[in-house]
Amino acid sequence: MFAEKLFEITKRGSTVRQEIIAGLTTFLAMVYSVIVVPNMLSAAGFPPASVFIATCLVSGLGSILIGLWANAPMAIGCAISLTAFTAFSLVLGQGVSVPVALGAVFFMGLVFTLISATGIRAWILRNLPASIAQGAGIGIGLFLLLIAANGVGIVVGNQAGLPVKLGDFTTFPVLISLAGLAAIIGLEKMQIKGGILWVIIAITLIGLVIDPNVKFSGELFKIPTFGEQSLFLELDLMGALQPAILPVVFALVMTAVFDATGTIRAVAGQANLLDKDGQIINGGKALTSDSVSSLFSGLFGTAPAAVYIESAAGTAAGGKTGISAIVVGLLFLLMLFFQPLASLVPSYATAPALMYVGLLMLSNVNKLDFSDFIGAMSGLVCAVFIVLTANIVTGIMLGFATLVIGRIISGEVKKLNIGTILIAVALLAFYLGGWNI
Image 1 (tube, helix red, strand yellow):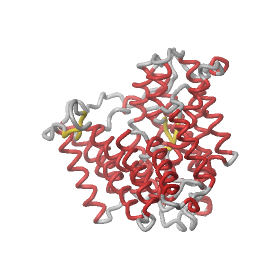
Image 2 (cartoon, rainbow, N blue to C red; image 1 turned 180 degrees about the vertical axis):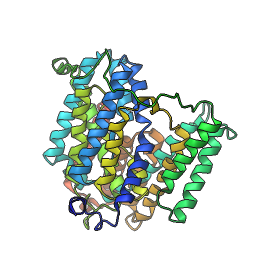
Image 3 (cartoon, rainbow, N blue to C red; image 1 turned 90 degrees about the vertical axis):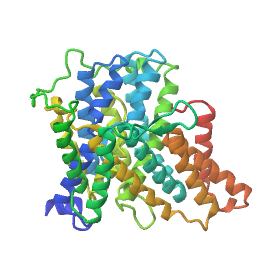
Image 4 (cartoon, one colour; image 1 turned 135 degrees about the vertical axis):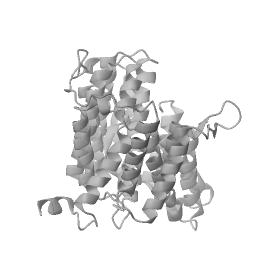
């Protein structure tokens, strides 16, 4: 009864079992982050053992926070895009020390939280036109599809002509990923509960038998420790207040605001957690939860946090309440003790789930109102350029710019509100100033 009252399980058309399966699915879809984030940051001099612990803590505590407080089926982790920026642009590119970089991450989380708590971020979300929001959902779906396909080699970089080309179709990861995608589609058609999760587990087991790169080390348990080179509370706040670092904090905040906000909106739409006005249920609490998580990042010693788009894998598996997010959080905290198993699930086991979610998110095309030609085309501009630039914020910026300019030229200025215009101008200035990531 307590869980029912707190999470509205029946009201949202779910069950505890369904939420647990959804949480497991999301966890397996994003557990790669505890491998990728330490690897990326270690290239910039961050101690990987400390980053692994910090990444698990941020993902665990952040996901539990958004699940309990916002009752949202969304998982939080260290954002891969902001991880790349922290490692390769801030530390390696600009020569900023690791403690100063962590100070910048902390201040980014502080400003991000103030923006969220004061309602500024919710105001941005309210003034996010429906067509742009839908376009962002389409674009993120395509982006997710591309990331997953590239991760297993279905498509690879092209040195001449178009940016991508078909990879080696005969390799095991490509064939098993495509077979897994087809299996998920079949199981979902049959309405098999947890179909996505079963496919991930099945492919992992097949990999253990067939793939020599997927092997069990024999070690299961390891006491969690930050290691001798701990980054816990090693942030340099005064160093991060240097004039040269403040533009970095601004870039991190702007990127996080629109990237994470667009992601939250897309996942909420996928889970049918929008009210009659098209706003996210408990949206303010969800927005604040992911910004607070970046404060954890600075304190523990890892990259900025955000809601993961892989949360949509859980919503596709039936997640509708915060229970699924809490399951994800608890599994990440449990992962602290199972560091040797962190790399056991291969990328080609989770790729089918991510590709399936990407395909599902393309259904947002049906929601575009083509009787409003400018709005619909602006949404498509947003969607396409998210993929072509591999950047969610860039797509949103171009979508806003297209909407405003298109309305002005077509004589539909009355359809614009001041909020939309202000956001478009701010985003455009952000890019023209060269502050974008």
